[in-house]
Image (cartoon, rainbow over all chains, first blue to last red; front, side, top):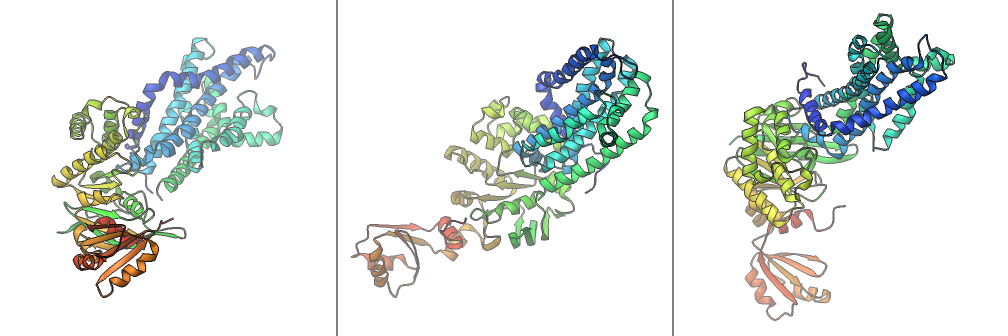
Length: 256
Length: 305
């Protein structure tokens, strides 16, 4: 298995997905933004009245960066599970593409890029809203774009691994209830992880989302990510590793 | 002529199952070659191997002079594949399906546009170019699949059951188009269950069953070699069968009995018929032997399940 660099053929797979998305973009925005907006305002404003301050800021402010990266995680995860599975198994689109000069690795990279872009799109739309209502400033919002993309890309890769192993759509409910949701709740989006029991803190530090949340929070309110260089490296290592595994597993599933 | 596709000692194992057990074949430029055999014979495995989505366990396979296990990308750029199952993009219109597919081959812009229009006219789907896939009939989908496999103007065409499940009209349209591709010099390989399809399209056949090639040759040659020129199909009561065969003693023929029907494959039909004149058979049919007879002769009449 070798990945040709530049893998420009992946862009044709991405282009195919974007062409499909163009037809459904409005419903896709509503589906992807509804939930994070609900979390932000129900919890940020509602619960925020009861919570005086977290880490020296109001609860809505504390919540905003975490909800942004979680939005990237969620959109990318949905796309590269349900969406990719549909393309791989139901519509057999991958098989059709495999009859052309495009290889399995290029298909996987194209699909993962698409998941990452959808994640980025949901998260930046949310960021734009937060800038508009003056919760976050424009400059840090723009600076967080690479992080949102990276978060989306990482979860797209992890989801692709699940998709390559999945016997059916039902399988994804395990992934979401046993992995994505606990991570969403325990990675410092809703409360600082140092308020958790020590052993859960250790688990939490293994979650990629925890690191995204930490970087996001200091990017947005301190306009720096330097204190979290370790977190960034962890995210990059996880991303490369999971992309490699995703490609291997998809190869095994598609080329018999 | 030098073959443009060649397989030597091809083996494919899935765990314990041997899907292909050492297959030799070759296809020359401009030829249309058919692989015939019952379900599970290994036809699709072989075609998947040629299209690069099944890896061979051992043996050699070259297409257009290139090794499939080393130069799959170069090969795929120059071949066209019509898979058994349609896998059109339901989110795109007819023409956008073709355009997206052309893009995978690096064909875009004006070249793609003229290619797509030419193909839509060729298969008579130009008026449907804006239609969604869900609005097409089964025959139209298959026709679209066929021209999709032609977007890169392939030198070699792989057709896995091109007309299975279509009504006779749609089938004949596809046959006619395949014949015109053939006369324009395209090299093709196909699998089919329709003996008429094989007879209409194929210059040469490989009969295949349980992962092995049983026979190879031109359709008519094969029929004459294995079945003879004519078949007598006789329907009669069970107990009369022995009496009938007794009466035919001394004549040169082979016979096969399936349920209520006795098939005779005589060297000389006239001689057999003369002896049967006074015999009370319910129904007797004398007909030229066909590929179907050959198929049954080589692969048996029982279900392969």
